[in-house]
Amino acid sequence: MTGQFIVFEGIDGCGKTTQLRRLQRWLTQPNWPLGMLQPPCHIVATKEPGATQLGQALRQLLLTPNETEVMDPTAELLLYAADRAQHVACQLKPELEAGAWVLCDRYEDSTWAYQGLGRGLDLSLIEQLNCIATGGLQADLTLWMDLDPELTQQRLRDRGAADRMEQAEDAFHQRVRQGFSQLAERYGDRLVRIDADGDEDTVARRIQQAVSHWASQTLKSEA
Ligand code: TYD
Image 1: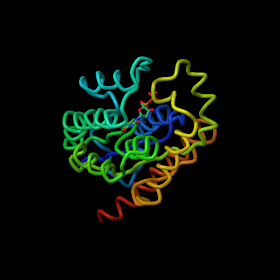
Image 2: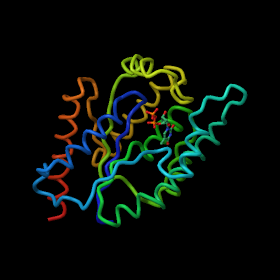
Image 3: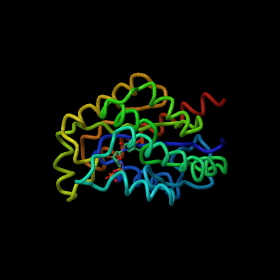
Image 4: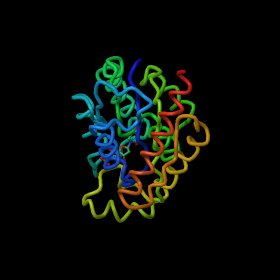
């Protein structure tokens, strides 16, 4: 792989989609901001679930509320894994092999936090399934946008109708946050916590600092 793979993670309503777009803009400005690293041929934004044609159908199944039948947590886990396998094969690997920088809204850590800590599924099983779905493709940098679920509730209400996952009770979102926190302790080398409490510009600056720091470390390790 010659590209770089940067993932945004966090609970629903933490602002990662907005910040991903801002990072993409920052990286594509005329003055390349990471002077020490070579600029990539192109920078692409993508997301899970739903980046591929198959993924769009799976996203619909996963997020549309259904009052007549509760989705089994294992079925949910397998649908997210199927979306990821397709995404890796059809988009992520080809883009990275072509030298692109890929900014991805959610990846395997979401499965660990949501289906593992949130739904309470077996964590070693999730690790195995993540390995199968990703084919071993890991993020070079994961930006975990950390915000208290109590603060995201208002944002979600302002957005309108909640999707199936957002409808989960508050305790679920607290467990998901704990899941990301555990991952940050375990994978501190690639997973950076970003304080997502602040206005958009402040949070964007924190992310730019984290990316600049990561870029300088990456350069050192490649030297
Ligand atoms: P997202 O696209 O971030 O939601 P939105 O567009 O509404 O901001 O993510 C969709 C939902 O899917 C989100 O609630 C998190 C959940 N999810 C999982 O539970 N497991 C996973 O592996 C992934 C990728 C997402």
